[in-house]
Amino acid sequence: MAVLGKDIFDLDRSATHAKVLFGDDHYWIEDNATPISYGEILTQILNFDLTPYADAMAQYQDGVDRKYWSDAVAAQIKLYDAFCGLPFYNRYFFEKENTLAMLVTYAGEENRVDALRILLREMRTTKQYSNALEDIRFIQKRYAWFLDKMLDGQDFEKKKGQRKTSLADQMRAAYVDALVSGVSLGEDSHVDAPSVNIQYMVHRTEQGNEVVEKLYFDRILDFVYVELMRGMQKGYVPKRCANCGRWFLQTPGATFAYCDLIAPGETVKTCRDIGALASFQQKVRNNEIWQVHQRAYKKYYARVLKKKMTKQEFEVWARKAEQLRNEALENYAFLPEPERQQLVEELTAKLNEG
Image (cartoon, rainbow, N blue to C red; front, side, top):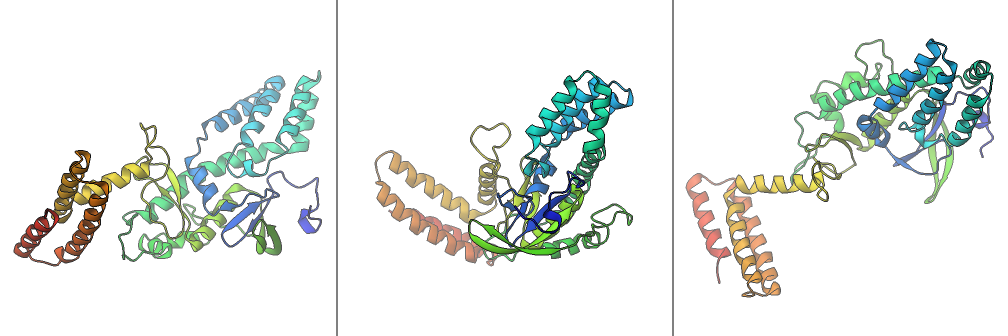
């Protein structure tokens, strides 16, 4: 356990005053040794169903407002349990079971009014709970808008050899670059970006020692702002799946349009499987070279099924057919229509020899 500076155990420290260590490719929250990818928690928040937590918050507040202390204590137990399940907080609230046990003890005491008042004074949780609710609602609304705006019209899947547009260029092109500084993606100039102090330390990981930046956050909104910006510096960014609409984390160097979760209505196929098939089918529909290749492919594969051709012979043919197809594709786009038709006829003859 660290024993310097803010890492000393402090009874006055807010429960949501969290230490985050930012490394080259990952970061760590508090004493949780599990590395987290940049943008991972923002992606979870964008997909998170906040309704159960909002309901628990409303029940708790109703009990306090009406001074139904028995109901309030019971709601406090439910609320704290829901709070510990929120993205980000679920990474370091390991004292959950002990705190729940304390709440249950208070709930069982005869003088529940005093018990609840003591509990609220000691834990100072009411503001933390409401802050979390406000922050996540804001993130789900504003950050989703920002990312949708930034990525609108961009090619999610790059073709071979196609230059990938940087995230900074995409922000400039969408006219949202001004929002990343000073307003923390806010809707007006009164929403300021967080002011954070940075310290450095050597953090030991399974791969070895790493110099990391140590920052502290009191609210999840401030953390997410830093996580997103640091992530985009490194090439991480949440994207909406073009099939199901859920958010997934785009990692550096990858350009997927679809997530790898099971697609709606499917039991095995992922959105990425469906997207790849749809993309392939569209490619075939829109290009005569691909149409010729696929007709020949199906013809020769049928011979394998009928035992008129061995698998080895088919594999040899398929490799040659792929080479011929790719050569034809390189020339097809630059030829006038009459010469295109001649190229298609020549490819058809070559693919169907033998």
